Length: 496
Figure: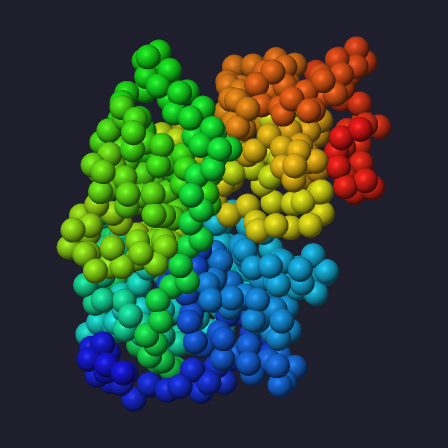
């Protein structure tokens, strides 16, 4: 324990164990916790609460920035400690509880949670649990590897528990840009005109009288699962890079492109890594999460600056960055997610958004969240914030999976997260469909020609031709639209 990290000495008598801190949480409370894609999350207080919930009947509503690390969501779900969860998760145990109806889940655009709290459209936060590097002399707090919704939680929560993580160096001071937009109807323009603009303060303001407990930890974030590019992800990356090169030739973009946003996962990493050997240079990012590929691009000299809400990287990359912060600190910034994901900034900066789909249909509607229309996978995350407002909205997925038993291009998606109106480019390992300026019938043919796995192309073409014969602006055969999903459920394959 390093009490020197509590620079406001009047708070030093608030130090306690994780179990003592967890005892403040009462049944039915709304708890807001720091954490965004496994970064900067509660490492000990929420797990201690999960242990407590194994022994007594107690449930909470849990809000975070995004997903938590160290299996915390799973521990809470298994202990029966959650009544409601929002706005994003990736845990298998929690997912099963949600799909069984045992935990209610609010799948929400990541830009909206803080807005709804400020507008009092959600129940108020009773207790906030926030991971920090240290508490400054004025009582303000220095976040660690994410900002997420911590600014809102700190400002609006009735009480606050702080986890001071000594595994994070105090030198993180200065990598955050803490800006809170005014409440309606007095909101001003957010004055960011480039990813590197810093407009806020370096610490999160906090009323010290709210602090009811301080717990020390020395635990790093859960490492990201980094998968090496495979044949499919490399093919997707190649199609996207070729598309960008053609856009440069047409004069639509320059070799610097525009600020890039990429979702998390192996496809996003493969796409970003593809830039290393490309002709593009002086790239920038305005995204949600900085992954290994971000820092690889910085090291290669291809990426000059990156703005996001968290850092979620592998163990090796974590040490590369935080053991050499002086080398990277002028290359990136971490912001609150209602700034990194705010629609107006995404539109103003002309962001190129690259996100992952579970499936898409012949008209360009995208399902990012549900398997076979009913079972949640992870959540919409920030993809909707970016898709609707991006200069280019790109969605990627493999054409087929499970030894080609499942086609990811379908007559009609089983759940719609992003309508055809928000989607510009669709990419699979088979090819790329540019949907800009196309009517529905043109979009369908473009997608069938370029994105569908060969095993399914003939049947999908037949569906479209017969639908067109029946007529309509957006032709469909409603009695067949979900037949592929039904066939999968009955036989284990979408193939006839």
